[in-house]
Length: 110
Image: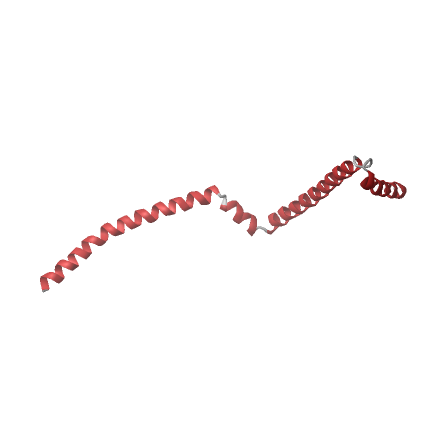
């Protein structure tokens, strides 16, 4: 029985270094993939942006100005197109009369 226990211990000890080397290689490969993906996602730049309050304020200010300007211009274009399309329907009997009244109202207040 003593020999069986020694063989088992010797077998376990001999088996672990190979398994550990294999596991370390596998973990190193995963770490390399993670490092590559972090470099591709420019994680360092993102982290610097969120840790520097001045950069964050400037970024958010510019984003707010861009959104406001885009919303204003987009609304202007859409309403202009809608007005042009509706002006094409002034000759339609029922809808045209209603649109003509709206046009008169707008012209009188301008």
